[in-house]
Amino acid sequence: MKTKCIKLSFLLDMSSCSSEPCFNGGSCVEQLYGYTCVCQHGFHGDNCETEIPTCATEPCHNGGTCVTQAGGYVCVCRGGFTGKHCHNKTSSCSIEPCFNGGSCVEQLHGYTCACQLGFRGDNCEIELPSCATELCNNGGTCVTPDGGYVCVCRGEFNGQHWKIKAFVYSTSFTR
Image 1 (cartoon, rainbow, N blue to C red):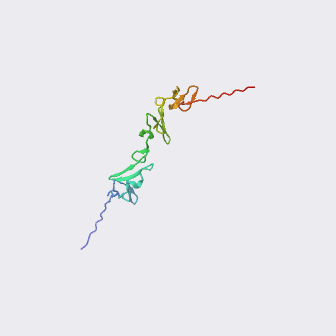
Image 2 (image 1 turned 90 degrees about the vertical axis):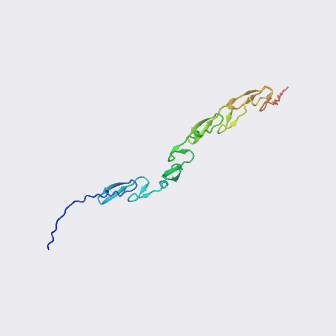
Image 3 (image 1 turned 135 degrees about the horizontal axis):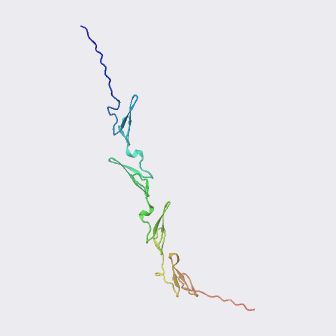
């Protein structure tokens, strides 16, 4: 018995990417001898099969601490910074550090307080004595320069509150 051979000819058109070899949303790119996977953020490996721990990429800036959570991470920012990745510098004045009606003024590295009349201190926390509470003695007149007070004494008195009578010395020479 004779066997007859038949020549079959067909073209198998199968690309390397047709089997969708890339995982986790990776994109397959045809190469001359195979394929390469371009992985989504957070994945790596030949087929994007390995998840990169979210905090391993150090996503938090300016000293922020990365805390892994279900489905991602959260950055716990240091004081003075805010935002998803701690990129935003907060205003030093946002905490309202000035007391007694003082106005907060932003500075390059912090703030200063512009105090209302009658107050001083880094945060306007110290009340200065005023003419209403500190009366001058012996007829002295109270004035308020620079937010404090000063007693202007009558001629024969001196001292902080003009309680001390001044001594007048006179010297006369005879020839």
